[in-house]
Length: 399
Image 1 (cartoon, rainbow, N blue to C red):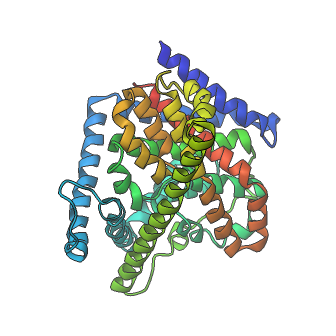
Image 2 (cartoon, rainbow, N blue to C red; image 1 turned 90 degrees about the vertical axis):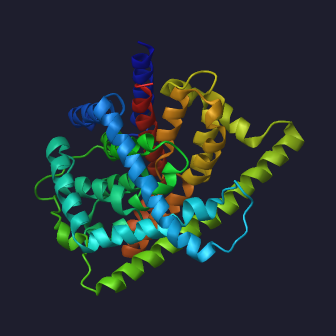
């Protein structure tokens, strides 16, 4: 019974905040929201509360674990000479370097036109169910596979023609999703079932929040049809050149994440030490108290709300890898429900640094549209965070 109470409080929180910042409260799309929310409940129920779904989630997790083992072959060949203390784990080698291998696989699937096929028809089905618009549905699915900033290149011809409302929706989708290249790395830090479920739910959560924060209708005249084969720009370059590009992109991503982790973790450590010396309380603990009401309304047990609130804030201020790393260290001290909610909440790109990445990506395509994104950047971060709250709340229903 209490699970449903907290489902309602979490939904009420998302709707209330979204309503307060909505661009047009009279046009909030309740029917679309209802359809997508029902679809979320169905997906989460099948993934987390049925024997077949649980078995499927286990199989997917095992598959990604197997991929990590294959990636270890290349990592060990290059870094195998390093002397590492027995039983120790090096985050850069064990979690980040496999991104290079996963990126290569994504490149192969894209080259073989498997990803364009999946994105095209999944986006088509989503549009038929939710009626969000062909472009929005296509892009929402694309973000869950391709990641950013590359995903914006798939619609670069359309971006200059979008109005501010449609531009907001695609940017919110980009922040609420995670790319396929990092899924295996996430699964090294939290249970794979939460990663996979969150990926599915986040596609819909971003669109649901957009129906509140940014409601609009797409008329037939305004609809910008998307040719997915053109949009995904399946390369005509030689196979090994394409593969090499994806491998280099994967390595750049891994090293970029590593640099950000070094900087952000050091900054958080500095703030914790400074606050402890001056106020006798750590900075992350202060953040935990600030976000604990949100965690409570999502259904996090009262004994976990400070720790979970701290992780929620850490993700927004730094990035999901920092927060997932901290969660991995304290997961055993949290309840199963608290673990499920925060694990699902963290699986998105909703943080300050990604706002900059998205703004820069759009600006590189269209100076004018980049200016629009910069103006609603904080509203974009709020919407993506609400989407994460919605996803975490729904997952908490089953624990």
